[in-house]
Structures are given as C-alpha cells and as structure tokens.
Length: 354
Ligand SMILES: *[C@@H]1O[C@H](CO)[C@@H](O)[C@H](O)[C@H]1NC(C)=O
View 1 (cartoon, helix red, strand yellow):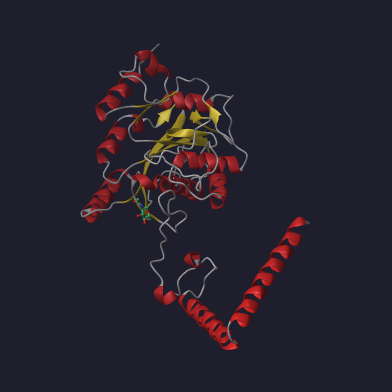
View 2 (view 1 turned 60 degrees about the vertical axis):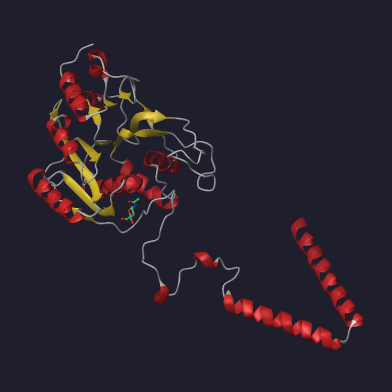
C-alpha cells in the first residue's frame, strides 16, 4: 500500500521542480534562450540513444547480432565451469555395462598424460575384479589433451584404450579447473550407459583403495540401497572468502556462509539412483568449479544429504605416514603421497590385520 503513494509523491515533486526551472529561465531571459536549451537537450538525447541503443536494457547480457557474434562458447568466468556444454563422448568402447554389469564401478578421473597413475591402478586395486563374490570394474575418465603435443597425446590414448578398453573420454578440455565438468560427464555416462549398477565410486588416481572393505560396507544390510552417498563428509564446510585461497568464492556467487554437506572429492561412493537425480538438479544450480561442494548443492536441491561412513577409520585424508597395518586393515580409501607408496600400501593392505 505505501509503495504506490510514495511513488506518486516523488513524481509530483519532480514535475514541480522542472516547472520552477522553466519559469525562471523564461523570466530572466527571452523565449529564444529556452528554445535553444530545449533543442540542445533534444540533440544530446538523440545522440545518446544513437550511441547506446539499448541503454537500460542490460545490453551487456543481450547476445550480439549474428554477424558480430563471438564464438558460441561463452566464458563462464573464474568461479563457474562451462557446463552443460553439448559435450560428447569421443572414446567410449568399454565393454563395462555393455556386455557385463558389475555390482560396483570405480571411476577414476585422470589427466590425459597420467598413464603412470593408470598403469599403477591397473596393477593394484584396479585389478581386483571379483570381490566377496561381487563383480567390480575400474574405468578412467578424461577430457581432451591440450598443448603443443595434443595430437600425439591423443594417439597414445587411443593405443592405450585399444589395449585396456577402460578409457572414457569426452570432448571438453581437460584441466584441474574443469573437474566439475568431468564429474558431471561421468554422471551423464552412467545414466546413459550404466543404470543397472548398484554403486559407483569416484576415486582420485593417487588414492589407496581397499576394495574388499568397500564391498563389505556396500553389502552390509544397514547400508542404504538408494539416496546413498558416503565418504569423508564435511558437514559445515565454510565458503572461503580469502581471495588468495585456491577455493575462494565471492559472496555474489555463493551468499551462504557454508556449503551444504558433501563428501570430500578424493573418494566418494553413491547408489545408482543418484546420478540421474543430481543431473536433474543441475539446471537449477549454476556449476561452481568446486566439484564436491557442487554435488552437495545438487543433493540439497532434492532435500538429500550424504551419510557418514560407519567408522571414521574408513576414509582418511592427509593423515600421518606411514600407515600402520592396523590402519590399512580398516581403511576404505586413503590419500597417499606417491605411486610407490600407494603400491606398497595396497600390497600390505591385502593381508593386514589389526
Ligand atoms: C574447460 O573446458 C571448456 C570446454 O572444453 C574449455 O573451453 C575451457 O578452456 C576449459 N577450461 C580450462 C581451465 O581448461
């Protein structure tokens, strides 16, 4: 009620002031002066309209006419990634989920050049294909190589895939800042090709994974079969406001002081109903470059949240090395500092007792 009244009052005062000005002008000088003044105001207005045709219409955000159009791809700025983006899979011939459906799929995001890490995983935890009677498979997901030798890198990747048939490649540019795209493309791949799985784990290439402990957890009757996501869950992760921090987020991107709960990105597992739900939430939430926090935001959109792992010995991040046999016997996933350390931890973990 008060708003329109207020508006009226302001308009009234404005026209009164304009009236006063004109009266003063006409009294102090001739009508001639007023004419010149009005003409000048008119000319300047026409000039301004000519120079800035869409003033006041958010001109910076309206697309340029076709003839002047920049490349179709729009820079998402420093805090978002270019997703969705009509990306395709350009390498996608793995038999996984085509001719055989595992109980658990391990998906490892890797850089195109990370062949040493891939080979280590293929020799260690990635080689465990039948665990507690359940089929487990490992795939690597990557984007396009870049740089001067991109073409050679791509040829090497094709040979590598010919040998192992375990690479999934999409045509976005690979890079740390694009991790959110990689994760979302993983979910797209799962929804399109792999919906009969029970669980999927996303795990970084430098992690130790105790596959048997993971399968044991997933087979446990108290583990949910739906709306289930676990890992090392961060419950009150603050949105970082220090501009020098790698994960800085200004208030205009995220106004809330905390992210919704999410499992840390190095290793999390989810039931296979979640990929479609997360993808359905994605159009409502602009994708920030922090991929794990983004998943938390997508879960929250559905009123969902991740679950703590039953033991806090299961997901270990930045702990002290070396890990004891007792730790290795209880762990599901742990960060490591090098490929040799990961290999030796895996070997030790297989017979480790507490
Ligand atoms: C992320 O991917 C998009 C699409 O391929 C690309 O245009 C952009 O340069 C990439 N960003 C980085 C930081 O690599």
